[in-house]
Amino acid sequence: MGLSPDTERAIQLCYDAIATPGQWTSALDDLAHSIGARACMILPHEISDRNRGVVGSTEMQKLHELCQRNLDWLKPVYEPRGDPFVRRGYQAVLQSQLFTDDEVRHSRFHQEISRPAGMQQWACGIFTAEGRYWCMPFFRGSEPFLPEHLEPIAEIALRVARIVSIAEKVSRTGAENEVLALDRVGCAAVLVDGRGRVKRINRGAEDLLCDEFGIRNGRLWAASSASLARLNCFIAEIEQAGLGARPLPAPVIIARHGTPWLLIEALPVALTWSDAFDGCRAILVLSDLTRRPISDATLLSLVFGLTHAEARLAAAICEGHDLNTAAASFGVSCQTVRSQLKTIFAKTGSRRQAELVARAAQIRNTARH
Image (tube, rainbow, N blue to C red; front, top):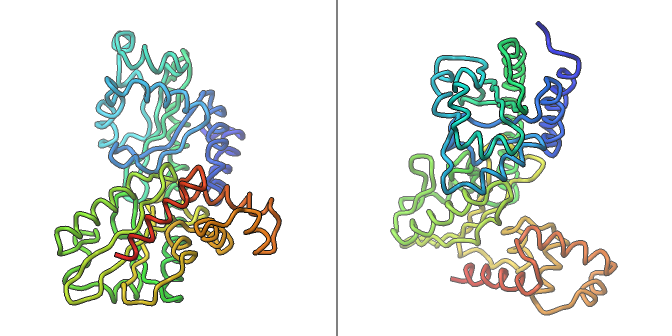
């Protein structure tokens, strides 16, 4: 039994979303609708892996909002009962295989969350990609999924496995190339994933590794307990940053006896490479503090990923210049600097110029210590 033309077209849109991650939502909308479902999503089976790799169709937002409102009592529902099916190699499973009708009627999750969201019925495709189990649940209203739906859902999951595998490889390769490019301009850099694990390190960063700073068990490590505490806190903030949900942390200093101290700054992975399925979360730029001091504009560019023009404007604001003066000085229009300022606010997690100035001062103070 082959897939319908509508489903084939939706799968092709998922392939397109590898290059343009912003298209995942609409692609999954089409994929869900093509099999008579209201919504669907792709996510790692292991709950601990879900700080990345979760994409969903538009309607999934309703279910997510209801879950967020009920976190005080909500516990995993499908995962505990679905895990045996995953481990035994099932390619698709229906809600009726996990729960009886009576259990659904008495389930708080089904009655207070999935029912109000209009997603009482569930079926799930299961696949593996890049060494991990993944799930692709489909939701619909009161009409249950039937055994004849298992075959097309399993086929969709098989196709999506290829898509996720390609997406991870494309994303990882792009981020790794950025780390190597930084080496060519004299920047020591380390690529870390959403759990703070080192994925790639360039030659410049390798030269800075020593007995007091290095990589242990796949993570950055420092011999000094105070430095290790700062480093662990720094990495934890990167983990919490998510895919743009929070700003990356301010730079951190690593002390070394008899060797220049290190300044570590976190840059976001370029958005064109920050695919939803890959773990690459940040590029850490390492500098020893004997190097020539860098300008405020360069420091702001390194820490927040600002372009040259954005960093120049941010530095000018921090020096007390207003937007009109900055525009005249740079030879651009006021509209241009206002547009640049909006981007600066987004990248730095600031809402006002005063917050930007305070954030920049924090970074300068860190870099001087």
